[in-house]
Image (cartoon, rainbow, N blue to C red; front, side, top):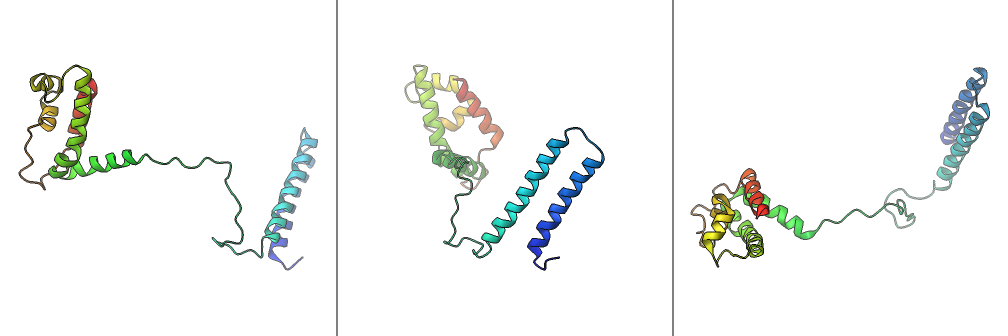
Length: 174
């Protein structure tokens, strides 16, 4: 038996594959020729793994500049997230934490959306506030109205997600 552990490992794997083939021969399974072909492929794969591991044994493992193989070149590059969407996610997260963030970060975005949606209906936030209030509803109007004063306590809890969901549903319905 060779002393090299890689050779012993390859021989052990080959012996296991051969034992499986011999068991199939003894059991006289149908498609014995197919089993023989699988055995040949398995032995070839074991030999290939052994030869590749031997040939790359001298190369350093890690991110060294010596060996740069394009592993995974067939895979698509991971999708990059849209920067504006990430900023909007952060804005929503911040607006849930403090009233200041809800007023100064999220409110302008919602105001632009509401103004655009109302303009599609032939009205606007400043042009006809009564009609805008009627279309937006009380909850959305309270946050979006143009004359809204800044919060007295800036560290007060911000806009909770269920309420924001209702406001967005109302904006979507316009």
